[in-house]
Length: 398
Image: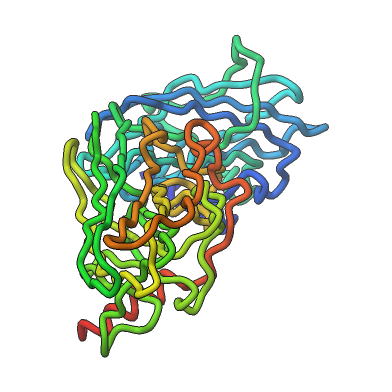
């Protein structure tokens, strides 16, 4: 009973400090200059597996904390960290009367256990950790029973440390290869037809796009520079201008008809985006994702080329990562194995017409395309994707 009352008291004090189960980025800690915290990343984890990782910190203050130190950590839907020790509760551990020496790196005397859920869908997950002074309210109470295991910090043999207050967990064999082939559209001026601009996951792993934190959708995106003389057919009453509905979860935005501007075309290696499509975001190895779009060849069209370029949808976001990736994570890890086949040509072959000028240069591929991360990302207007989703819900009477 003494231990239970003590844990309740400590938990109440930590909650009062606003630190339990709250994902706090490193720069948002009460005194970010006082503590340097480093948590080890884990790669190659199988869904359902439990594991331990190292955690260490350095106290950079001038004088030791008065009442001790507290460690807090988050858990999400797919990633759960637990500490089964007498001085720990759900989401925290309290180290009463611990006075770290300034400049010394400390590590835990026993590990924390983290479990990746069996139904974990995506490829990367993260938990946030914070460390700070123990509140005075949590520092006076009965000591743990002698039989209970008490977690503690001790000086580390490795005194090298850098700020890394989160654990990034990536799944085993996560790499996939989204590929798109050259497409040729052939017809006479005035023809209307459906072209399937399909893309394929070449594996080796299943391809899973990150979940949009606003809409909940998962998509791979295809940006298209249309050949001159090729236009998307408006679907008629009930469909707003600038939108082409593929199905309930997938759609295209047509520019400049759509009310918001497109993302920065340079993210895709293009000079211009005429059509931005959001296609299926979960594909097994070898699975192709259909992307049927209705086109019309204009009366004055001549043969020429456009371009196609694909990115997983988080590459064009500016929002902070969703909860399962932790608030301190600087960017979304990229699992695209071969960006060179993310680009292709879109040929327009107009029968009975003279050849026209050459199309745009294909996007540069390789490291330059994958290194974009989120740094320098172009904007897509706030609420644009959510608006499109809500529009579809209205049209379908959801």
